[in-house]
Length: 256
Image: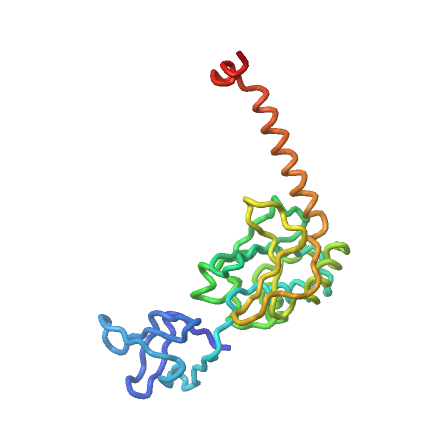
């Protein structure tokens, strides 16, 4: 697949050769300069018959891509688990509205709270909505196998840290993928003002998909225990602080 990005030389049957200055892969509209450095022209990849400089047609899929990449990331992680990279984890927290979401891959220790960050191993809707790539040299629409191959070339040392066994998480992840893919993805986030949901939240990855009606899914192994312990620690800390604070004047008056 050829790269299409600002700076790419293109050919238009009426304007001749030009250079891309902007592109929106969700809508198919591009901006390009043809001869003039001061003036750009807006073109549609659906109808304006735009080509690469070597004459290859630039084709644009009429249907929009998935609004979030979590389902493809899940399929990639599942395939890498089967290849022995069981210490590879996906932390994702898309919102039901689809307007705000993030994802992060990490390897090594399964620590949901202290996740190591590596460049290209995390992303958000703020970037993906205008440039639907993961960030490790992939191209839009790559399959799970292609994403895994691209990630291995991008950061072989980071991926090598996942070459250990984690059978509990691998089995859980395989069951979740079987229940959700290709139309749904799981979320490890919820409205923090309310209680933690009993079951794993599920989000549709594309528009027009009905609400998930499959079996309820459990949280990842150890995830609920971490959050339960965290809540208990916060309660104990708050109680200890209150006991150590001096009594307020209003409290003293009430006691009298």
